[in-house]
Each structure stands twice: as structure tokens, then as C-alpha cells.
Length: 280
Image (cartoon, rainbow, N blue to C red; front, side):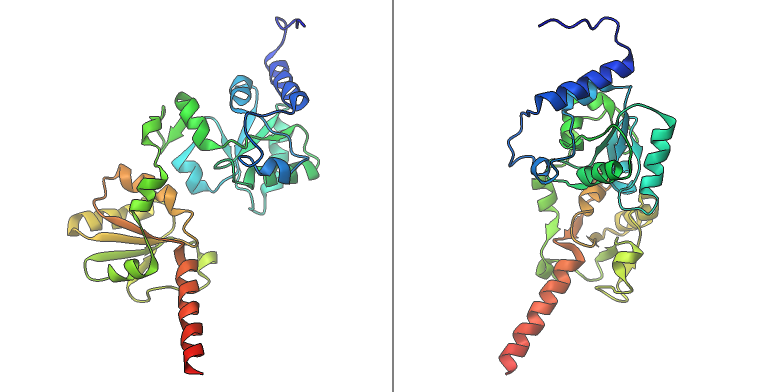
């Protein structure tokens, strides 16, 4: 079968790629690798090569937090944080300003945020919306020239931080507590809504937002005083992005709390229940 493609405009090319993707219905990924495709059957997706071919006639939306976006994103992507109150209004404004397809992405194959963003946009009546569910890491590996890391492009794929390196800088509750002392600076990087007025280490920690400008003060202090940074977030997920900044600053010693504040509280509750049971 032959196709006459020579007269297609940029927008037509994008539409063609999407039509082929939808008609094909197939994927190089097994269902177990891409669980969102089963969980969100009404959400259409695009693959790596398809999204690349659609450039620049596509609106790419990074649905993650601002800190994740500022750390690593697809070049030219717009950050519209999914879950924020004005999310749908911002997406509708993007649609009003352009007829190009809108493609949402987040961290990777098991990240549901891009599916949820696409579904909410569909339900709000926004047309031609899709998910790029393979996510940011596979994009960077395939197209480093079209990626941005800490404000710089192209990105060396070797600079992506793997699970082993994150694990080497992550401590369980007991080990984390052992390191608390005069030679450590403790940072709580949860946002104020996650903190809900609680701290794990009162009078010993500093609450600081996930913002590299705000964090720089403590990085410089740790370097000048030869101290270790002990850092925790809400559930252990956000610190993976902070690690890029710490590595770029050549921080000598830093550790994250495995599972974040939630793991700490869970272990505390477990100990209380255990003591109560023994006392009976």
C-alpha cells in the first residue's frame, strides 16, 4: 500500500502519526510494563518515535511538580502541574491558543499522572489529548539533544542517576537516626501541606522547600563545616530529584530517609503497638 505524503503540512504529519498509533493499537511494551494502558483503556498514547516525529507541531505538557520539571524535562515542554486547582483551566487555555495535539508525560511506565491528566482533559471536553506514557527517562536516553537537565541542554544520558546510586545514599530509620548529631544538618523538604505542623526532629532540623536556591545555603554550610546532610521528604519519592542537584554541587556526604516521614511515623506506631501488646 502506498501513501501520498509529500503535500502534508506539519499539523497533518502530527495527525497522521496519531492516527496510525490509534489504528495500530499495538505496542513494543508488554502489558505488565505499561499497566496504565489497561487501567485507562480510553486514554490514547504515543510512542517515543511518534512524539519525536510530531515535533514541533505538538504541545508537550509536563504534568509533574515544578521541581521535577526544573530538574529534568523535555525541551520545549510546558509545565502544568497535575493536581493544582487551575489545571483544567490552563489546559483549556493551551487548547484555545493552538489546534496542535496535546501530549502529557510524567516519570515513566508506572507513573499514572500522565494518564490521569489526559483523562481529566478528555472529560473536560479538551480535544486531541494523549499520553506519552514511556516517560522522561526513556526520552532523555533516546533524544538527549531535546532534553534539559538543571537548565542545560543537551543532556549526557550517563548523567541520569540510577537506582543503585540512590540506594547508596538512602538509609533506613535506625541508620538515619544514628547519624543525627553535631556533624549533621537535618533538612525537612516536605511542603507545608505535607508537614501539617509536624516535624520529626524538633529543634534540630530545618524546614526548607524543594527549591535549589533555598537549598544552596545548607549545601554551602555543609561544605564549609564538613557536615553531612540528612534529608527527608514525605514518602521518599521527591528526594530522587534533589539528588541531581546535590551531585551537581559535588556534595561530599548526604543521605535520604528511606520512605520519608511516612516510614518514620509507621515505624514509630509499630513500636508503640508492640510495647502496648507486651504491657498487657
